[in-house]
Length: 122
Image (cartoon, rainbow, N blue to C red; front, top):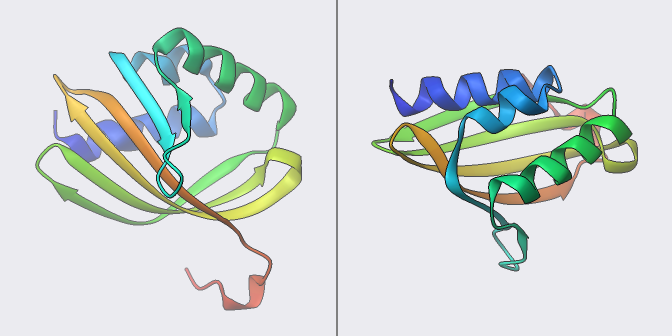
């Protein structure tokens, strides 16, 4: 399956807040980090399951809108608008997904709080 379609299904599972389905798109050696600081968010699927179970339960209205997607072979870069993020924040994110064996092996995120809704154009 094409990398872009896999990431699309991954994000659909995120929007449904379905942890099991979301995790099913992750490679056994999945890692996630914040791009700017290189802060490791999780280093395996079980850590990811804990993080996203908590995020989905604490943020029942979390929803990602993909504004733009670039696919280059096994790398997918999304520009995303995320509503209802931790503490009800709205954020803009650049998400970089690297795939291996049709699963997401690494995710890197650049996140910024968005506080100016007038500038948002879909």
